[in-house]
Image (tube, rainbow over all chains, first blue to last red; front, side, top):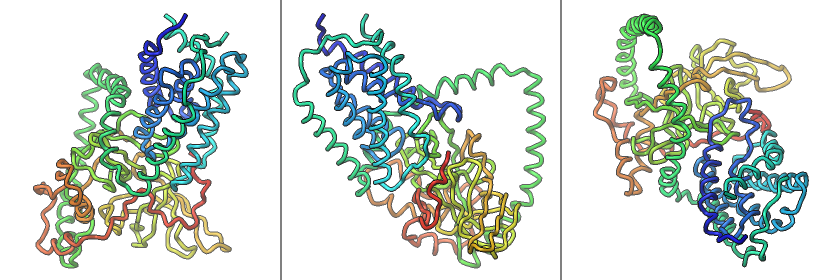
Length: 158
Length: 344
């Protein structure tokens, strides 16, 4: 069944907003290191599922929101998220027919690329974060991906 | 089975590469402009207003829970707390009697020396919002912003001592960088000897380092470090940390000194924003430049609350435009910091 991409906009915005809230929800220190990048996963999901509904714009503005909220250089997350969302869009036809494991691996690669761009911009702007915990996020994100897809696809398949 | 529906497999979206490059260029441009030219302050300030509702929405359940817990405390608990607070108040008042005399004396002496450095003149209290900022840096979001006159580089205290300084100001909120952030440094003085040095954050909430003390310097575990007031960012004389460990390696030229912050960096909920004479003079210069923000005029000298009973000779140094406060969030003399130290 074909559906107009505009009807996707509302669940898209809604899920991005919820993911943003999850991204800034305070968690106790020990758990906090294991927090996946919810917003990034949501952006990847929409880039793969319906790129025509404006996945890149979503990526750019979500990234900008993260920049403002986290107080880093403006444009850092926007850059990383845009590039990776474009990559995800490019891969989308393949990803859709992948098995769960392959999907997770693809997402892991995308998340690692995302983290790497952040890492690079951090270094280039003169405040590097060298802790290893930041490389944990891609692993967690890849593990949680199936759950994410399940939830989100239920959200807009009503 | 996790699978995507094939609804819009109809073809690749037109010009993906083009749009990607376009957005990426805009983002890169933003990074460069923000980093190099520092012109996005106002834009960012208003963008943070857009983010505010989300932050409040996330923080409010926690505040609601606090409120709920407070409102269902039993009468007994309240009575106990009340008694305790009264006792504390008596002690504080008792101490204050002596303090006020000392303060006048200090100010008179400072007046004689023509130095008004670091006399705190005004406070406002801000609440930390229950919001996670960057997970890899030690920063908190506070519910006071440019509207309340908060400025970048402003000293922030809590009940125990110096907490940090304002790193970024939004219209309604501001970001405070903690003493313990690996990119933070503060000029301090050993209270016992008057020895001046710099305390640098480690990325670990409970620990600061004093990397610039020689092995022969007079510092022992238990020494109190206070702000020296040099650089003009922090008012002088507030407790910063207690030295907990001094390692002297005879082969090295610098001692390895650790200190524990006096402020409860990981537990405080309420923070005190301080206006001191010198920081204010320094901040007034840049604030006077852009005509835009009306609210920043709130940083102007307050109609003195009792604390500022300054003797006459103040203005000479207070007006002098200090070149730039040493209040950049990254003031460390980046020489020999162990760069892997921020194992947060």
